[in-house]
Length: 289
Image (cartoon, rainbow, N blue to C red; front, side, top):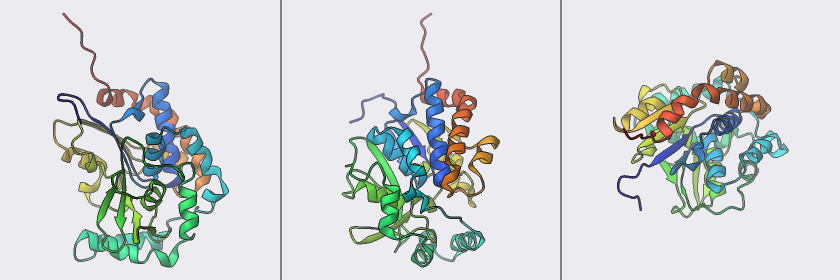
């Protein structure tokens, strides 16, 4: 139970493919070098790439190992590109008549037809390092979308689903990767709701968003707009890649060979954003007098 007057902090980790995983890890490690431990968040929210990083942090696993696994043959098999035809279908889904959920469902129904890898191989690749783990005794939220209805879900330790499959579902980019089956239902990438799902940090007083991708067609879906929706009393900031990080991550975020450069760029960028993070993350030092 939350103590009266206590401050609740959320770390929100957004979508961004293999390069995004590496950049997020590099930034977190770089912040630690500057004395800022964001891994001690009261709530971790992970979407797509962010779900991989968030789950490793919540489990207390060495995130250097998560980075090393991006160089594995299993992950190499998931390497692909979101080409113009795929992007066109995403745009079509976003402007279809009806609810936004129905547009997501329309997109998800086409996911099986062009997947670059089978479901179980995909789950095994994504879940390396957490495949045998139970949900941690921490507030961890993994976002996904039901393929049949397009409705967003947030898996937690109370959802009764295996952690590894929840993370794989959150990473299952439609038209590139297969939907992931959980208890007979099919789920796809949590990042197709919004790229970071920062609004799911409702109830927290301080929110740090680390977003490899911050653009969305709808302004209301962008991380900074979602942070604003949490209310004026919430202290927050959103860290996105700077020019050097964007160059290191490359144009294809789903290319795992970009991971080393993306990680280094994230670590370097931490020096430039540490001040902003401290203002959100750390309680001010009170002095008498």
